[in-house]
Image (cartoon, rainbow, N blue to C red; front, side, top):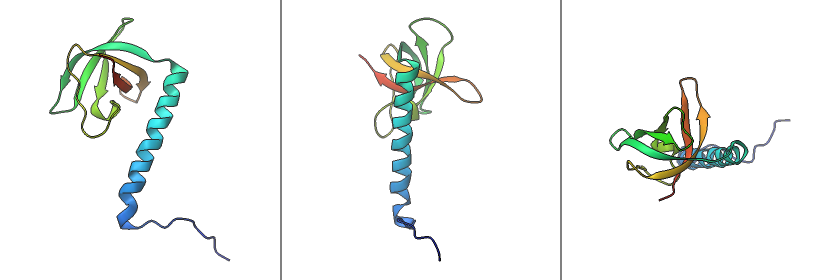
Length: 105
């Protein structure tokens, strides 16, 4: 006897599944932020056309790359140089970067 599945993938609900996956990923990132400790910094640069920039950590150290997908909020997000932000550090195979970025002021 075959297994029954509770949900069937249809072309019209793929976007909903993608949205749900992104929301779950953000929740996981926020949980990691609590574990790792939220840090603060100042936006050095942000290119709104590319959606990328750099944050200078308040405690010193190397500047961190930031991508608009790692800024909390919806849609295409931008930062302005000089803004104070909170974030947590994450790392991929290329570099450390800021994730879960929130504007403080």
